[in-house]
Length: 423
Ligand code: LLP
Image 1 (tube, rainbow, N blue to C red):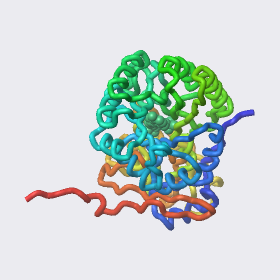
Image 2: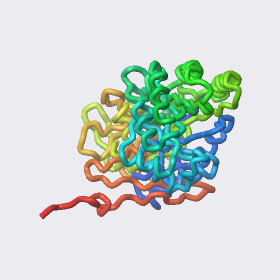
Image 3: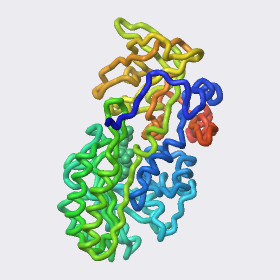
Image 4: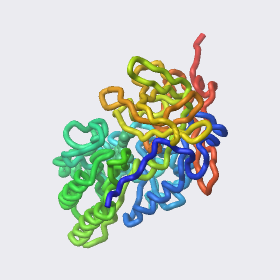
């Protein structure tokens, strides 16, 4: 039995609403999220004691609000993400641990905010322990450990090993505990996140590293976090991770530690991509179709200012065509290169790592048709920019069969807000 998704190169609707209607009503480019997909993914993680959403993957307030209502808490990697979580209704009550600041540095803003609200902190560098201890002596902290190995879908998303700036190096535990003692800080939790878009094999190795480290820290440890990194399939030949197996490995680790310490040890998971990637679609309109030598280019009104993953990592996103009229599945399939409007050659959605242009077999398109970049709900809108003075897209959430605007398309006034022409 295979556990792979199926992707089609033509698509008429998203969550029951016609793609053409969505484009008509909200304009293009537009990000559309299907809430049902997020809800399903949350339900699949129900065995973990705490599901902490890495909001960096898709942080729209409406998405965070729905996460919160389903009992999912959040991590925050900046002062901005703390504010965002609070704006979405997350509590700063120190007893609740709804928002945890996880980073490798405190910038001054973040440290002030963490101290002001007594927020729990996950320290990714030894300096953070002292900086927090000076401002909040006696604090409880979690340490983010770099176990000495890592793995991601790209070298840029590998967060373990010597080349990574993330986490406290695994041989420096003793030094960190001494540092903590100086200001009465207690290490009550451990966290390991080895990379984004990794696989079960690498993720499983983390359990052993966690067990070793927790024993070294000792019985003050009450929480362990498996971090994020759960991959999702972006291609039909990729499989979903066996979550049951993943949970079992971690649960066994947690149980051994509980027995060792003589008290319960809570098990957290911190996914971003897994919860939001498959819920998101970026709809763009075809504006030009042209032949360049051997290549058939389809140029759309979304670019890497809207979805940066292909240009940044050579990431593959499934692409489908929604015909303006009729059914794209009845059209001839042709090999095309899909690109955007930006004044830069790298503005190509069908590229491999290193910038090599690939083609994709898609139904023949005409100007006015729509293309849908799929699995775009994680690290999609959040990595959008205003490059080429492009306004950022609108975001729409579909729930209960209804499409609701959750972010206005930016305006030209938004583009120059804050800019000053001095006398
Ligand atoms: N926890 C920590 C401490 C992280 O640094 C990250 C991701 C996560 C959790 C969530 O990882 P996930 O479950 O989403 O794999 N922009 C890249 C991904 C960067 C991930 C950064 N940290 C991409 O588009 O693939």
